Picture 1 (spheres, one colour):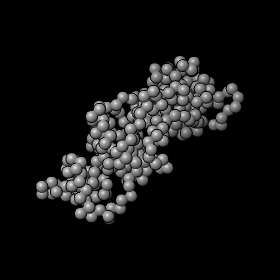
Picture 2 (cartoon, rainbow, N blue to C red):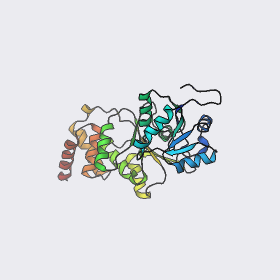
Picture 3 (cartoon, rainbow, N blue to C red):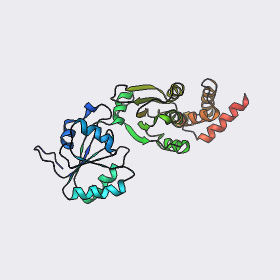
Picture 4 (cartoon, helix red, strand yellow):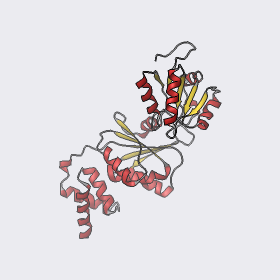
Length: 289
C-alpha cells in the first residue's frame, strides 16, 4: 500500500502508533490517518476515547483485544475486504507489541489484503536509548511469566543471548523479577524506566541486585515499567576452574550476604557452570565454616 498524497485513503489496515504518555508525541501522519479511517480497532475504547476526543477524531471505535479477538478478527478482515479503511491502535505505543494485533495482520496477509504502518512511539525502544546500555544489538523479550519457576525458565532461555535484553514488567512483580534476573543472568548492569515521556519520568541505573534492594526498601514504583539489562560478559567457561568458582561463591555468601541458593545461581549464571554443580560446591563451602 503506497502512501497517498491527496485527501483519499486507500482501503486496508493502518497500524497506527499512539503516544506512550505525552499526548504531544502523536505524529501528523497518525492524526491524518485516524481522521480518515472508517473504524478504529482498539484495546480499550475508553482509553482510545481520550485521544480521539483531544484531536476530534470522528471514526467509530470498536474493541479488539485478547478476549474478543476470535470474534472480532473475521469482522475486521471482512470490512477491509469490502473496501473498508481500518486503523489498529493499542492503549499506548506501537500496536502488536505484547498485544494480539499480529493475528489480524497475519490473517490479512494470508488474504492478500493491504496492510501498512504509521510508526511512532514505543516504550521498549524509548527505554533502551535512555538506559545507557549498548544499543547496537538488543532483544525485546516482552512480559516475563508471573510465577517464579516459569519466570526463571524464561530467563534461562535468554541468558546467553549476546544482546541487551528488554522486558516489560508490572510494579508488584518488579523486585522479584529483578532478583530472579540476578540469579539466572548474573548481577548485570540494568536500567528500570517508568512513566516514560510523562511528567514523572524516571530511569534508575544500577546492577540488578542493587535495584532490587532499592525497590525492597522504597516499595514498588508507580506507572508502566520497562527493564533493560546488559548483554552477558564474554567470560570463557574454561577460565572458571574450581578455585575461581569457590572464590566467587565465598565472596557472594560472605561479603554480599547471599544465601547458598542465590550465590549458586549468581555464580552459575556468570560462569556457565551447571547450577546444581555450583550449588553442591556452595553447600560444601558453607558446611566447612
